[in-house]
Image 1 (cartoon, one colour):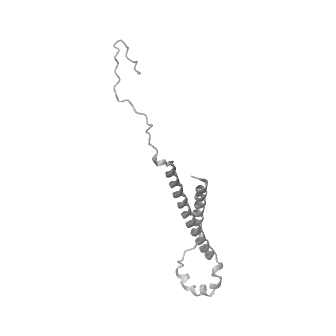
Image 2: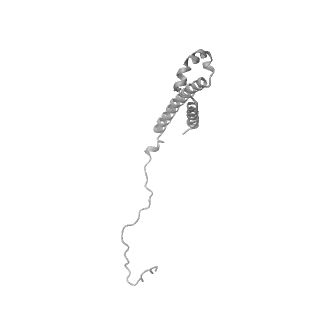
Length: 124
């Protein structure tokens, strides 16, 4: 992998973590009975709605989500271009032969052909 792919991957990981944190900081929309009673006050103070913490978190969520989407598409194009370049030059890892390097045990019985050889001492 080249450095640009690695840098984009690092940026995408950072953006994904930021996106998770920003979404977790947002409050839920369900406010229960108190939210339905005080609903009129929320429309009265609607002009300050864009300055609240929830509004800022929603804006940050949109910005980070768009940046994450752009980095995902860019990373996809870069990786596919890198793979097609490797196939043209023959550096594809998947075409390399697989060599089995595990040791093979000899299953043939050991035959002692010399009659004068003493038997091996046994451990008792």
